[in-house]
Image 1 (tube, rainbow, N blue to C red):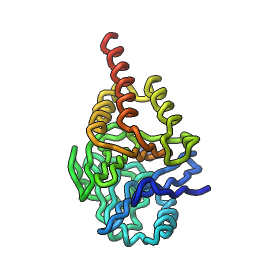
Image 2: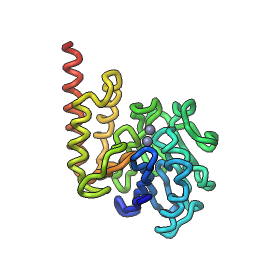
Image 3: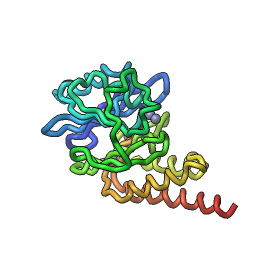
Length: 237
Ligand SMILES: [Zn+2]
Ligand SMILES: [Zn+2]
């Protein structure tokens, strides 16, 4: 199996590419709108042909992609963008020094701490890389978290790629409880979660592996509870 391609919601699609070198799915998302397709994250250069194949499945070509948004500058999120010649490409300004892309100047490094591009709201989450962003698509209520919150190297939920994913949620809570987020990054991570919870999110699309559907606010609140408790323990020590 080289990739999975599924609808997340009406007009929002996930392409989860199996990366045999990393033993993980690398996720890309297509949002199909009347004025063009938006791509969020693009996997590695060697995976470009899967993006073309996936677009073909919905009757589209790379020329139909008019906007590329990158959650951050790691190779598995930016390298596949070079085939999208008609697209404007945006990333946070702090990713300039670390972007792992053969032609970084394809991107405009203009995104700040918070803003709006077309019908996407974006906000800085700053965990994972200094300029990591999350994107919220207003019409579909889908949130794209990049690697701020993802399931890198994890098996898919037993319920499928796009599902409630209670098993994945449980594992992430355990991961956090067991110190999965470094102590010196916890504060920034929790701030990012708080910002996420100010949006009305129906689906959480992550940078790798599972997509979570429904009750996102309670999942994020649970993460906040666990994280805040860890911080209290830190303060007492
Ligand atoms: Zn990354
Ligand atoms: Zn990644």
